[in-house]
Length: 465
Image (cartoon, rainbow, N blue to C red):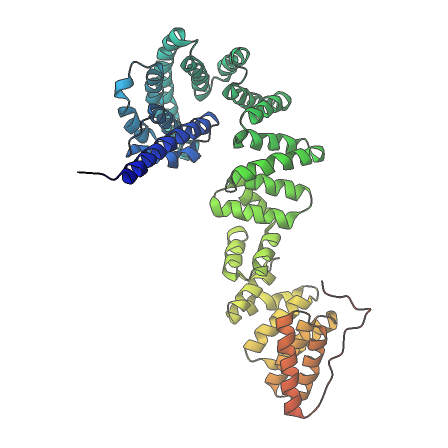
């Protein structure tokens, strides 16, 4: 069979590009592993569970990524492809670590265990780690001067951390730095150690070095932000810097979102903070800081939902944080009434709003909302009285006049309706609502045969933004 030379050329280019892609993936995967960014690496590694690679280092790196991201089954799949490399130090080290990785559970899983389950898990893990450390000591003696020897020392320190033995872990991390001054894992480990000890000054110095060596490491930046927030107002600028970098690295990190909210709240920007806490809860309904802060700042949260006209969501939030008591009037009764009114549940809305009108100080929003409810329940006279009261308290609010116009029309008094709509048209600024008001004026003028001219608001009156 004769194959055209052009086809041969394109086949060679295709095979060359495949090879280059593998090399590019290998380099990227090693960087992601080195910087503890295993979740970013997993999607790249998935293809190598099925597709072959001419670069054995890809299998090694992806095996580490799987084992270090609580995916031991996937790690075993790739380790099986490396059977011909059993004599290599990295294979031997990977084999040692895999024994521990198969027992390790993710932190969020460990938190969900009851005390007995957690105690049993920790005991089994300690036994497995002790076995692995004996193998590790032999490995380190044999390969200490090689890259795998350095990795083994870092892993040995992590094993002590996993057993809760922080002092030996810190001792090993300190010993690594003089020999490997760019060992970001050692700096990261010491940063965690001093955080646990409450020594924020030392923790900060090691975390800053970690962030320098790992430009895309979120954990170091997050903890540096926490330290800066603890320092008070003098540290807010620095905290903002670290949180901005962390947010740029991962916009869906719940902890980062929560702390951005904390920083905004500390700078009197509660409405903006609420948005970040809301986003955190959307990603994790159990987010502790977001839950607590939203409960403390529930009015801001509800008001932001009302602005977006998310009536059902607003009701849900109120009920989750401030359950309604039978016949009880509270600070959220007005919000509930507004939600029910906009959902067309007028009886429920009246139940929330009427006691407030009787007990609370006169409030134009409350009066207007109850008036709208009464209007929909065909109690037009009562609605007019409420709109008149609202108008008296808020003379420059066009909405009060608009609803008064609706009520007078419903009562069959077109001249009074025309007067009310004329006032509304002179005050309303929102284009759609203004158009509706002008249309109402034109229709009522035609119906009554009376001409009116909507007055411009006086210059002394406050202007809408």
